[in-house]
Image (cartoon, rainbow, N blue to C red; front, side):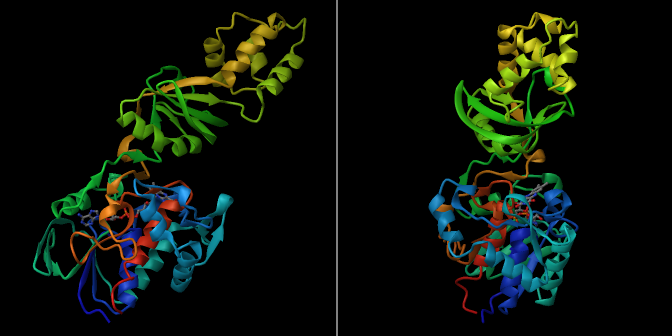
Length: 407
Ligand SMILES: Cc1cc2nc3c(=O)[nH]c(=O)nc-3n(C[C@H](O)[C@H](O)[C@H](O)COP(=O)(O)OP(=O)(O)OC[C@H]3O[C@@H](n4cnc5c(N)ncnc54)[C@H](O)[C@@H]3O)c2cc1C
């Protein structure tokens, strides 16, 4: 049994699991949360359904400057370990597409309410509306200045998350505390975030959603591509394929690269298949306006853009020939959109970067610089892909806090 008192800053995913794990082991735990309630990001996650984890945990789904650290933390902590933890709370999980796991209730609130119940049952003291504003360590004691007075403990966990989604409690404060105690920071950028464009034509397509393919070019060089929904908006573009590309875009924009997307609006049709489809549709005597003719294959709002960008001079169906069809096909499969910004941390689900993990023990999450200081969750320089991987990181690092303390 470890009798030393532990304070955990942040009652988000990582902090709640760390608190329950330590309290179950008999330790006295005080969990401090600046928001008026716990688990705000969990509550909105997965559009309120909470994509709690992913059945298929592989290293390439996580991003960090120190992949070796990620591998060591995840070793032995695959999905079944997380599932076992949630089953112990009475929460059953169900699988969706691509291994995504959800609570059977499909309600994020059931996850938070069961975590809260278990934390309290295990003896965790939870204090909301309690913002930590300063930390000092003298001898073996951490002294915290908070909006509810001074608090002290022998052990401290920074589970205060990242600056992503400040409206839900996202903050930089944990970084400030850690750097003051000697830790280093890897630069943070918004990830899983919508992208902005200054090109005026996108506004005219607001609300249009297609199952497409987005290729990213930086300074003219092909970087990567993602398939999935493309959603045009009044500021630029969103949708699942865009969120999946956004980490790369965000990092490159920060490095002043020129970023451009090439959008394939009909990825299910190869260039040849689409050319043949369009050629076969042309009726030689038809006076049908070209815009109307294209409505047979494309969203109305996108047609004006395709015609403008393909520089087609054809006005009616019967004027179409192979050369004109080639121009249309090229534009439908290669619509260019320059990207000048992201929607920032306010629109982001997570942040890249964070506490340099070379300074953290992957077995125990303890700082290598400050004894009895621990880290859990997104505060570390690790972020995951969309699909439950970010929560997996938060749950696992919360469970890991358990590892070196003599129960
Ligand atoms: C809209 C949205 C949807 C998401 N959906 C998913 C999803 O479906 N699946 C998935 O895997 N991931 C999802 N994520 C990402 C996931 O929510 C985060 O990766 C995860 O919550 C990180 O957990 P954490 O405990 O490290 O940080 P957080 O959950 O952010 O918790 C940190 C807590 O610390 C508190 N805090 C910060 N500073 C202080 C301070 N100084 N004093 C006191 N308290 C403080 C904050 O208020 C916060 O409650 C989503 C994120 C967002 C924003």
